[in-house]
Each structure stands twice: as C-alpha cells, then as structure tokens.
Length: 253
Image (tube, rainbow, N blue to C red):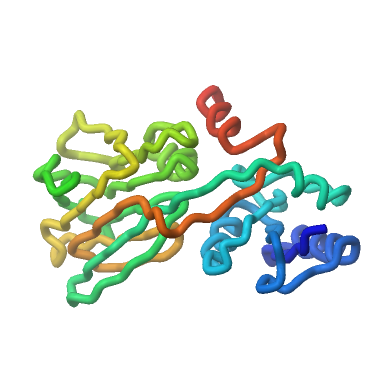
C-alpha cells in the first residue's frame, strides 16, 4: 500500500473528511509519503501544488470545495485502489520573471496563468513581444494573461480566451477588456514561446503581475515562458481524466 499524506482546506466539510480518511487509511508525513491526497477545491489544489513542489509527489485531489475542475469525486471507499488505477497527468507550469520600478526582480511559477492587471482606474499601456520580436507596439487594456491548457478553463475562459486541449503544447494569450487595438482578441502560442510584456507608463499607469496567487506590484517588465524544470503530476480517475474534462468544457452552454 502506498503511504498517503492527507492535506485539507480549512472548511468544515474538508476537515470532517480529513478526520474520516485518516481514521481509515492512516496519515504519513509528506516527507515520508508516496502520494498526497488533497481535500478541497481548485484553489486549495493550486496551493498544494506550490507548497509541495519540492518533493515532487503525485497529488490526488478529492472535491470538497466550490470548484473542482482539478479534483476527483469524494468517496471514502477503496482510496488505495483508486489511486493505484488513476491516470497521471503532468502539469508544466509557467515561469514568471518580473522586474519592478525599484529595480528588484521576482520569479514565480503558475500552473494556471500569469496575469497582468492595472492597479488604478486608468487603463494599462503595454508593449508585447514574442521571442524577442515586438508583436503589439501598444496594447491599451485592463490587463493581459498567459494561460496553460490546465488554466485555460479558469480566468482565461472568463476573459473570453480559448480552451486549449491538454497535451496540445500550446499557451493562450488573452487580453482583458482591450481598448486598443479593438480587433485584437488574443493569440494561441506554441508552448516553447517566450512572452515579454513591457509597461509603457509604469508611474502614471501602474501594473501588477500575478502568477496563480503570487502577486508582484509595480512591475515594469514581465517575461513568461513554460518551465521544463518544474513539473507536478496530478492523478485522475480513469473515467474522467483532465483531458476529457477540458474537451467537455468546450460543449458547455
């Protein structure tokens, strides 16, 4: 039997499930476990991926939160069997490298998306380059984001970006409330692309950059690329894997 480390969100429902599962299957410390079982919603799953990235253990989620796109259904019975038959899905996060007004640098990983947002009532003015070539000399918008296939159904979809099939080796770049150029609605990029976003008027029109939940304020330049060094594996029940969920999402009304 694999040694399981349970982690749970602080909600009453998740904590009750944690108690029941520990009583039935035990609970190994994360540094001695073979697999992590996360109890909560998608937000908690993202925090779990970041918190336990150094160990690189596979993570099996069970939905005990509002949104459970990255989770399996919650059942107490035969958890070791479900884990043993689960399909592994490797997530490749985005690496964000940001430079701030003060000259400091910050790096962060994003399994869903990197988003840039205006910090004040005034629209952001940014320049967009791809692999060192300027593609948009000036984009006026509330913000812009770059999403992975796993994240394409989250904030990216709400901003009218495309849903990307898992394993497509693509990224979605989507503007948020674009004003100029009016006809630009985003781009689908090869996953090996490097995106550079320069803030054109950072003092009058400040912008923040966020990688999942890690925010850096007052940025002047942000570079985004897919990381090949930092990966995490999610486990999904065979009858409803992540690839199937992303496909089904395209037919939701």
